Length: 295
Ligand SMILES: Cc1cc2nc3c(=O)[nH]c(=O)nc-3n(C[C@H](O)[C@H](O)[C@H](O)COP(=O)(O)OP(=O)(O)OC[C@H]3O[C@@H](n4cnc5c(N)ncnc54)[C@H](O)[C@@H]3O)c2cc1C
Image (cartoon, rainbow, N blue to C red):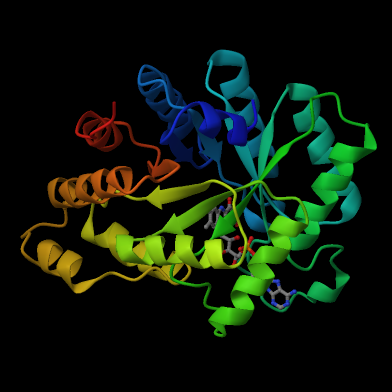
């Protein structure tokens, strides 16, 4: 089922994000996590993709395993950096044959070690080009599913590469005009940024569901890593004060309480969906779910 249809039936949707494990042991641990979380009937889960194809097979294997062994709809992420059109078409065909209904279409960033790569060799410069290609694939009739719902990444605080926030919304709207039908956001820790982003989408004439990315923090080290990885995410003073007050590296209680407040406020303010970044762990995610003010 397309994400848009799921949102139409039930609001807010609750979904989880996983990344493909790199070792056999981590894979086994993740399958236990997924089975545990399945009992909470998520509306969908998503699986990340290593830009440049660095996790191509791992992502594919995990997506297929979730389809085969669970009843949870799964959304693979797909990035177009360092990929040719025929590679993308092959991946889309595989997913279509497997019965995948939605794809999160991204540009990605150059993988480590490929910083000097000349992007002019690529068939797709921006996520917009990938969205257009998936739409063309949908319209071509060469798929065996009912076509893909197409999600895109949204950045409530702005994406650091485009400092001009007005131009950025024009680029963002181009992804919708190319065929994207829902937005999943970067994690954020200040809900006002999400509400402002939603209003700016409204002004730009973007009327697709917005699924808010929320990460319950678990450790101070993880928070520092997140600051390096998550393009542009801001850690507001109120969060930093809470974290500072904890003596150990383990901030899971404080991180969870913060995320629960964030989610309940989002629910109160009519968010279309909440996407929890699980870090492939179930316990923190379950405790957040159990504290949400859902009907
Ligand atoms: C929900 C979510 C999931 C993610 N999952 C993954 C994942 O699985 N794997 C991964 O590698 N990365 C992932 N990312 C990270 C993402 O790939 C990077 O943040 C990347 O830098 C931007 O991707 P994008 O799809 O937003 O790119 P784009 O939409 O192409 O935008 C990239 C930059 O280019 C600018 N831009 C767009 N169009 C134009 C234009 N025509 N002219 C000039 N500038 C333009 C934009 O304003 C932006 O600054 C994810 C991000 C989010 C929010």
